[in-house]
Image (cartoon, rainbow, N blue to C red; front, side):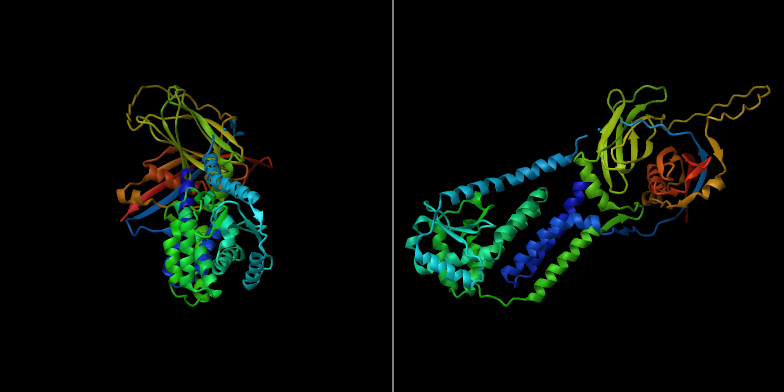
Length: 546
């Protein structure tokens, strides 16, 4: 599952980093246009999992250059076997950790909303006819069809805009003594936030950042989004006829008189905040540039194309298998981690004498998503990988003194697989020849309960989809060649469901052969008119030549 989060981290960083970079490069754009670019980055990040599930995957292979030529040949022998017995046999996944952290990230938002509701509850409606007339006038000037509610709070607080469905402007108790110019500037600024729907857009961005809490760029871009929102509203105030120098003076005076509560920023938009005041003043005093709709549209279009590419394109090495990476990663993986769709692969590990093998390293690898799970066998040789998404997995078991064991599993949703596995003694080999005089006995008749070998040529024709193994680059560089021998069970549907490695000179060759063979598909073999499971022996020969 760590591989899943790493993939999400890198692709989300690509989208958010591109949005930040575009805003940094297009400095001549108006703040409102830069705000739209950053908002587009959050929206694309929010819908990116859906894009990844809907769009077809595009795999771009990575080649490492030319090495010695390698040849891979395949031999196959097939037998029929009786029904395969599989005992069905459940892990908590990082999904709950992600969910707990996301909820924790939303706690400040909830607390801020509760505090803002309390402020609104204690505030009183405006009774000043001058304020009401100015509010109606300015609302009409900036095109607001619905005039927000104006409330006066009994305390001396920073002017702010709150509420999405019912917009409210909160003013301090001493606002009645303000000059007409200050009244106009404050109302214009808060009305600009309401007209631009900044409260709603910042809520969406905050929720997105909470979902992507493990991505630091989401919080950085969220802060930039708020900055551009304030600058865009300042620009609107100036375009309504307010002199930039006068506006800067009033902004500084209000920031020095009132203090904005940082804890409320998640649920409201204050008129001024000390942490962003200097940059706002510089932006206000800078002459307004001409809006470039073409540049803004091009930036958002480029960001959208990049998000689509991040959803559909997967870079894989030359020898890596092709599969529906994102579809399985985002949905099957997350559903499984949530416990909504959980398969289990487990078993017991023994040595050739039948004794349990403890402390062996077991690694389960999903070749489609590159996700790896690791565990060690217990004192009684047992191991388990729980809450797995449905799919194909390759199990690798290692312990010093024993040969590496590889097994392939094809599990469905909620399947529970429990297998007994035997580790063979490792590299030491001895040969002993014993000769004696005598007459050998006749071979015993075939036991009908055992697998019956079927002609290889006949069964070869049943292979309807064959993926050729690719010679691993590391094996080429090391000059490793040889044959990999499998025993493979073909299901009644013609899909490999159990692959056992019988012989292999090198783990890289084993992995390459497994990645290819697991994608094969057979025409079901009929026994008395009914589909039957098949056991096939597959030999993959790796040969190097200059």
